[in-house]
Amino acid sequence: MTADQPRLRMRLRFGAFLLFVGCVFQAVADADRPPVAAIASAHPLATQAGMEILANGGNAFDAAVAVSAALAVVEPYSSGLGGGGFWLLHRARDGFEVMVDGREKAPLAAGRDLYLDVDGEVVPGLSVDGALAAGIPGEPAALDHIARHYGRLPLAHSLQPAIRLAREGFVVDAHYLKLAQFRQAALQNDPEAADIFLKDDAVPNAGYRIVQSDLADTLAAIARFGNAGFYRGPIARKLVDGVRADGGIWTLEDLAQYRVVEREPVQGEFQGLRITSAAPPSSGGVALAAMLNMLANFELHELDAATRTHVVIESMRRAYRDRSVFLGDPDFVAVPVERLISPGHAGRLAQSIQLDRATPSATLSGRDISTGGRDTTHFSILDGAGNRVAATLSINYPFGACVVPPGTGVLLNDEMDDFSAKPGVPNVYGLVGAEANAIEPGKRPLSSMSPTFVESEEGVAILGTPGGSRIITMVLLGILDQAAGNKPDSWVSLPRFHHQYLPDVVQHEADAFDADMVKSLIARGHTLKRLNAEYGNMQAIYWDRKTGQVYAASDPRGVGDARIGLFKRQ
Image 1 (cartoon, rainbow, N blue to C red):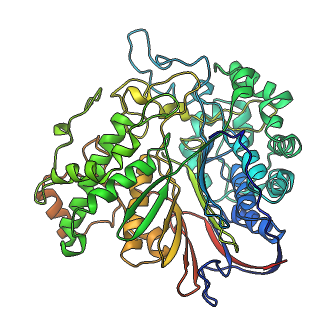
Image 2: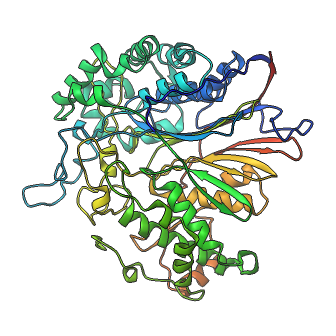
Image 3: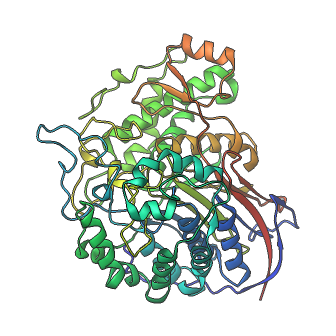
């Protein structure tokens, strides 16, 4: 199913009535329609942009365009027009669900040895910094596609908040300053990027306002001409010239050939919950379904806390092993999705889990594997008709490739690092891959982004998070917390732990395990790695169909904003 297939547009009409800012709203229960709309995103200005569009008659899909574009302006370290993502959509009137795949693609001149030296070894940093690290962006095409096929408002209308933010500027916060410091050296290597995101080649002070006039002009071109305003014409030429001047390999043909793809989401069940999540080239939905299927073989509520945590870790280990071997772009490789998410496959994996002992990753069979996402963004939207969107967007490492082609304002991604530069060699997040994720011209790299819906007779959850390789396990922990009866404020704030098969360590936040838990896990053979910093930035919404309550929560680790709005139908 491709972007060229027509989609019916939504015809529900809403006008602004009243707007509440908060995290919980209760009204008379209506199983078919939530009493309010809600948006949770990683930045207050992006949430505000989405609410503005809802107030002006847009639906959740129009708001998703507005939030995506606004994040491209105010979160340059996380996402942008030079990146891509996955937009998971649910249309209320007929229950139709789809994943809009706006993932980046490898340039046509790319090959499997792109980042190897003459001896066949990976050149450090080549797939992370500089224009050669950039895939062909998908976000502009995705925004145009969503507006045309699912939105009620013209694309030009939904992009106005972002255009305004780019022209008027935004004030940097502590999170921006931290990530700009982290990537300062790479930003300094590109005069255009340094001029926009630094001040006199240094990290700016708190309160500094970043104005992006060129980005505003690029957004205006997309608003006027749709995706042709980005992938063809003057902007396209500037992008290609800037990339090639920095050693990249883009061509005008690369841009002109880019298309989004509509994919059927991955679905699974767990304890009466229906989970809908991202399909390949995301590994999120497959890994989530596999882990939940494995956990369904255990009576988790009957296990003590340490044993339950041990079983969750072991399910993570096995799902990430499958990820490393089998997952890739389904347009290029045969991905055995049905087998990987089947209860039978999970049952066999679960049988190998010993309750008193960790399984060394080296003992799990692999293929082309040796033993030898720092920043992204997510938002969740629910409108008053029950339409919903979960979207996870990225330019990969903070500030992507740290390159801005002159005259465009577009910060390039470094998503090429998500390919397997060489089978068995870990990427910047420590993930290993096999032939299924090798570089090929026009191929989409494997991703961990996991925008997710969780639905039951009781209610509907919309959630997701950034976090590189840890995204999938964060969403897993959120789903398990929901299954335990907790609400979004708990999902987004609970302490986190993670295992990804290789390296064979359990990464965890400082307060994830108490002393007794640590002792018990080590006794079972786990190697623990306490992280120095918190991770993730989950944005979540829950509509309780029984009570009529709508909850929205933004991760306290970030600077995000969750809002609830009441809009009058026309």
